[in-house]
Length: 201
Image 1 (tube, rainbow, N blue to C red):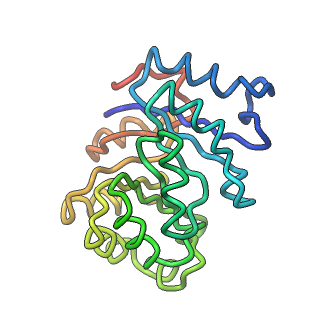
Image 2 (image 1 turned 30 degrees about the horizontal axis):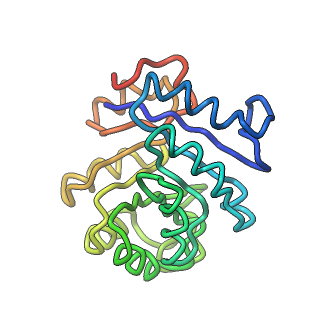
C-alpha cells in the first residue's frame, strides 16, 4: 500500500505548519525525497471557491499532486489540472451534481472521485447524499472514473464495491488504521501521519 501525505492549505499557508508563503513549497520539497505523490486540500477553494492555484502549481512542480481545490462544475477540473497537478480530486461536498462529474471526465480522465462523509454522504445533490455507497460507485464507474478515495468510515463498503467495479481505492486515514487498510487491500492511504510512516509500505 502506498502512503500519500496529506497537506491542507488555507489563507496562503499550510495548516499546522510554519505560516510563511513558501512553507507549502518547502514541505512538498522535503516530501519529494520520501514519497511518490501528495494530496493537497485547498480550503480556500473548498470553502470560498477561491483556490490557490499559484501555490498548487509550486507544489505540483515539486511532487506529483492530487489536488482537491473545490470542483463545483465540470470545467473547474481544468483549473486544478493547469497547475500541473497529476489528478483533480472531485469531492461530493462541493460538486453541484453528479452530471458535472460526467462533464469533467469528458474534459480529462485524470480525476479522483472523493466521497465526503459526515453522518452520511455529504452533497448538494440529493441524488448523491441519499444513495447507498454501492449504487454511487456503480454510477461513478459507469462515468469512467477509475480512482476513488473515501474516509475511513466508508472503506469497508468501498472495498466491497471495488471488487465489483475494479477502481483504484484510496482511504483518508491515520497510522493506526493501516493494518485494517492492508487487510482490505486498499491501494493507497492519504494521511497527515506521514512523518511516522515509511513511504510505500
